[in-house]
Image (cartoon, rainbow, N blue to C red):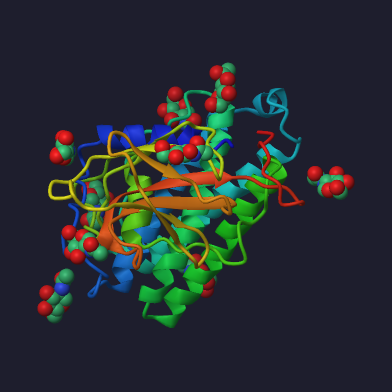
Amino acid sequence: MQFKVALASLAILATQVSAIPYRRWGADAYVDHPNITDTDILNFALTLENLENAFYWSGLQNFTQADFDAAGLAAPARGFYEQVALHEKFHIDNLTTILGDKAVQPCTYNFPVNGNISNFISLSDMFEVIGTSAYNGAAKFIKDPNVLQTAASILATEARQSAWINNAVRGGNPWSTAYETALDLDQAFSLAAGLIVECPSNNTAIPVQAFPPVTASPADAAPGSNLTLEFTLPSGANNTQLFATFLTGISPISVPLYDESPFTVTIPPTLEGFVFLVVTNSTQKTDDTVTVAGPLFLNFPFNSNNSLVTLAH
Ligand SMILES: *[C@@H]1O[C@H](CO)[C@@H](O)[C@H](O)[C@H]1NC(C)=O
Ligand SMILES: *[C@@H]1O[C@H](CO)[C@@H](O)[C@H](O)[C@H]1NC(C)=O
Ligand SMILES: *[C@@H]1O[C@H](CO)[C@@H](O)[C@H](O)[C@H]1NC(C)=O
Ligand SMILES: *[C@@H]1O[C@H](CO)[C@@H](O)[C@H](O)[C@H]1NC(C)=O
Ligand SMILES: *[C@@H]1O[C@H](CO)[C@@H](O)[C@H](O)[C@H]1NC(C)=O
Ligand SMILES: *[C@@H]1O[C@H](CO)[C@@H](O)[C@H](O)[C@H]1NC(C)=O
Ligand SMILES: *[C@@H]1O[C@H](CO)[C@@H](O)[C@H](O)[C@H]1NC(C)=O
Ligand SMILES: *[C@@H]1O[C@H](CO)[C@@H](O)[C@H](O)[C@H]1NC(C)=O
Ligand SMILES: *[C@@H]1O[C@H](CO)[C@@H](O)[C@H](O)[C@H]1NC(C)=O
């Protein structure tokens, strides 16, 4: 079910980036982010916007209307992507205006596209889902109502972009469940960290950390089938029961991992749409204190009859 072309490569890239140290299992730094400020949240959002902005503008440079046509994409797709790119630029302008000289500058990135427009489309799909879930998860930390209003306004646009890409462009579902999944700050950052090569050394530090990546196979595993997971087992976790916790809407589902070499999990048969998998040592919580690795982004596209489908693009 088309989930991982981009995602597996994402995690592979993540393992190559040494600039960003991974969060240690059980480390208590930043747990629940007790002291996080609106400035931190805005810079966190700006970090994601900078990544999206660089992605769309360079993608539009690389792929012409003729490339979109040759890939069988609908005629208006590229023009709408230009509008998406402009939205990201406006978001950056807005956040930068609020942050002033504290605003983080763009980093350099490694996008696993390799000149292949299919990879561009699937990565764009994932970025919009991550962006939506990141703003969703960050909302509870924002203190200034004006900042919250701005974030809400951006969130809604990211969600529309996400629906357009997965439904109109790719032929899949426009939404996942009745509720959008919220990612916490470290979870969202973990998904972006694998693509960041280097940031300006004087960028304002943001109190977020990336978890170690998870990779999965096979790439076409569907709900109900088995998925093999690879991640670094932290020291001290050898005799601990671990779980694959699937973040879906507001009702996470934890499933025990079995067979340590390699770890395997049966994907809950009820899952649909966009799902994030984190490896945890708890079935009761999904927060940073129990997270071992992840998230891994999964996409189980479905049609109007609620049947799983293969995406057209
Ligand atoms: C999970 O791991 C953390 C960090 O090692 C530990 O503090 C916590 O008690 C564990 N939770 C469970 C339910 O085992
Ligand atoms: C948060 O602030 C309180 C009060 O200043 C301090 O005691 C605590 O160590 C801080 N926590 C973190 C994670 O920075
Ligand atoms: C566009 O091409 C450049 C040069 O090959 C590459 O560095 C960049 O990652 C590409 N961007 C996208 C989104 O494909
Ligand atoms: C582009 O990527 C898609 C998905 O990864 C793959 O199926 C296709 O063969 C690739 N196309 C080319 C020309 O490599
Ligand atoms: C940022 O967006 C908000 C919309 O929520 C708007 O009120 C504000 O004027 C914008 N600020 C700038 C500097 O564009
Ligand atoms: C970092 O340095 C650049 C170039 O000197 C400057 O434009 C930018 O404002 C600086 N950023 C911060 C957060 O100080
Ligand atoms: C998944 O793996 C378990 C344990 O090896 C096995 O019992 C089960 O039959 C497998 N399920 C599928 C759908 O392959
Ligand atoms: C965990 O323990 C098992 C059995 O004691 C051992 O075979 C395996 O190598 C250990 N794994 C790690 C990562 O330490
Ligand atoms: C949905 O099911 C109906 C009735 O079985 C069928 O006519 C229709 O083609 C299906 N639509 C899709 C998108 O599969």
